[in-house]
Length: 500
Image 1 (cartoon, helix red, strand yellow):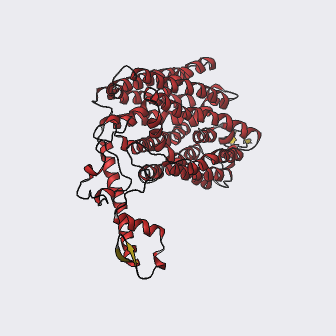
Image 2 (cartoon, rainbow, N blue to C red):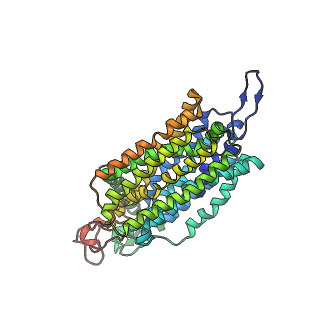
Image 3 (cartoon, rainbow, N blue to C red):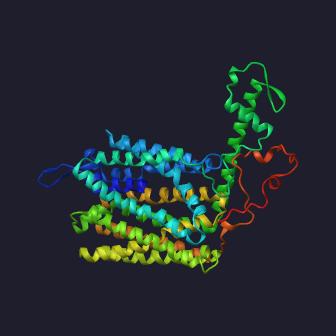
């Protein structure tokens, strides 16, 4: 919620402001907010909304991979700490480039939890309410943005836009601390990252080097009953570290290949990209478009209110509808047929409603049709992420969510905001630019409609899925109980079935 509150805050008229303008007589009006203080063009202004993608793009796959060997909530704590410092930096920014760099670091916060929170919810939710639980989580996207409009408008109007960012930092700080102190969790499909049982002789060497300053050791030391010098111990440790890194990179490449050849996953993400392209531009430029087209006196409040109500009811409704169908229909049909129909149908109808809204010149007619359109569009939030989680094996869920998130941002809402600004600068007609943008929803509905014809199964119940070790070296080592001759498949628990 706080992460997306930040998105709404920087897009609000109170924080984002307006640039300096001059009329034909040469009389100029001073600007306000970020755009006025730094004298930004619409393109530069749009870049600020997209800068977070740099941090997200770099950090999201890294956090997803590290989840195999580190406690996920500790990783979330690291990411949210970076978010806290970055938002505080935005409030103190002396120039455009300084605030742009801080906006990049804000993306690390989202990257730390977006790939881990959804699998955690999917693991812990009751079977009959999985999509509803996911819906509540993804409801925070529109709700957070909407509250950001209101929050940014109020703080920017009564105090100063900088205080809005400092307030965000204070709000996020307790959650960053919580990530470091909460009890460690274990995602299904991975072995416990806290367990240190059944260490092999080679693992013991690695453990000793972590706890011992070998530079202070003289002469041989005993590890596993053999005399090993400090230099040999250091060489062994470095060799293991390099080998672990290479194994992680190799496994990452293999996992990515599995995702890229999964047609259901790819088509689902393509639709999600087009969908997010429009919503991203709506989220950033919506209040300004409403102000310029319909001369709304309180565009932040109106857009924020509509998005809050429609975001809550639309997202939760989509989740409950899918859960109700899951109770009577086989999960394979939910992933392959029901979800694509729900996604494509709701998005297409929502696109028609929003397009018709922007064609109207009456403000009240616009508000009614736009609200209906957003209600239908937000119903897609939970189903699209349900498909992402259940069209892949449990051990691939963090990476699948990470790459889905990276894709929808790098090809969706990141380019859409500055591109909308460029088109508006050239056309100089808010209604026409907004109608062009809204028509892209039809492309999203088309991609999801294709998914109906693709064969698919619910891989969350894949019987061939085995538990993944957090240490890539474990499968190649000798176990102390005499199972050294067994292969990886025999060493792992062959009866392990990650419940979904």
